[in-house]
Length: 609
Image (cartoon, rainbow, N blue to C red):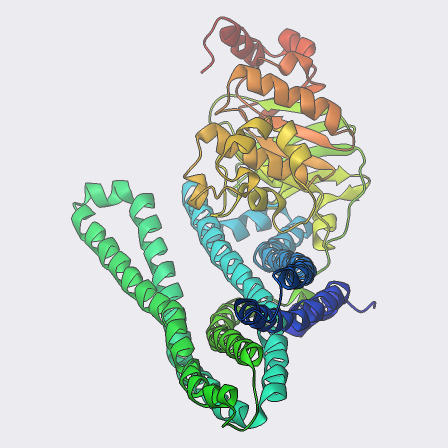
């Protein structure tokens, strides 16, 4: 078995995986931070030149050459800083993507693996036994639907929190690596410079920064506690809000709206207090650290002044005093950053501990790529009630590149039919994709079906994250297929715009197209689209269908819809009604299926519903 490039359960593995980037960070970071020592030295020399010019000991032209040299050195140092930050940001982005991908697999693939196992077990027995299994989970179709919805909501909330924690971890790593150079290396450089000028004075002034470090270490437990409390309070507040919205009708019927609103307000208040406390401990402590480190300035003014007067430990000129003073000022500032860095690392540590249970990708089955191929459905029989199948003997076939339209009266079982392909509904008969039985494919860890439902399940994350789900490939092509490119570009942050919980910041049509783009992005041999056009206009529907025809040559699309405007252009049509499926082209069903013909003619006359 090949060894994986990294173990997602260990933070050090992300550094090993991106060793090339970190090497570039190290080179540019050392050049930048060693070069930082040039600033105080040049500043001291410029002050000395000014004193000499004012005293008539030098010409003004002497300062021009020195100033130009200073500018060139600083330009090089800042260019190294730019490169270092660029490489660190790339490292953080790749690490965040790797963490997100693991979280997605843990939350989604882990749960779908269990579902696939149950489906395979059901398929290996009788349909009666499979239905009995479903009956034990739910007493009715409605109850099952409610439980599925609750499960999806919980999974979505869990994933949203885990993704936010993964981003915090990646940000903590970024700050840590940045400050290793911008604080650690540069402090060593500044210390070396201070010791060069006066080692005895330096030993005195360096007594104060360690006090700031000690204070930061003492506050560690309070910072960790405050961050943890703020995250938990935020989770509780969001859960209360979701419950208040989801069960609004129930609370209204039983007169409990005021009580639940008061509970939400309490949760919101606790979150605000916890967030304020966390913010104070994280942000307001840095000035204190800087103040403690800066006590050394008093010592420098007193003893450094004696050096300039020739009565101290070392003979200094104005240039040496100015360089030493500026160098210590930079060191004191960096020392306060170092102390504050401890708090940032502690915050990231809290997030890492929260997502650690989901960072074990090695324990999950590796998703196997299923090749494209023909779809063959034969004698498909399925339903929930033990003695009354919802549909019996559904048979049809399709080839890659074809679109199969599926329609029927309201509540006839179209969505239930789609869920057979997801492995959520046990069935008799056969669903074969590229010569493999669907239940066997799922049991072996393969995923042959991509799906989007008529109720988009969006995360409280960016448009890009909602589509890619942790993948690093660009999303532009599927945004175009879903006719959403221009709208996404017009949003405040483009594809990085956060859509809100459940897509609450979007219109119904926008949410539906992002969900459609997700299904197309994660392309599979079979793509099931359950009423994807219910919230879009006819023109947009036409654009999307044209894109599906031209840009999905390797996939079979099962398009479930009650709108039949474009069904004459589809390759095959299934009309579901009264437990039977009429199969054929649009023209054939217009001749052989009275129900389909009536539905189509009514919509032609403008009665779409």
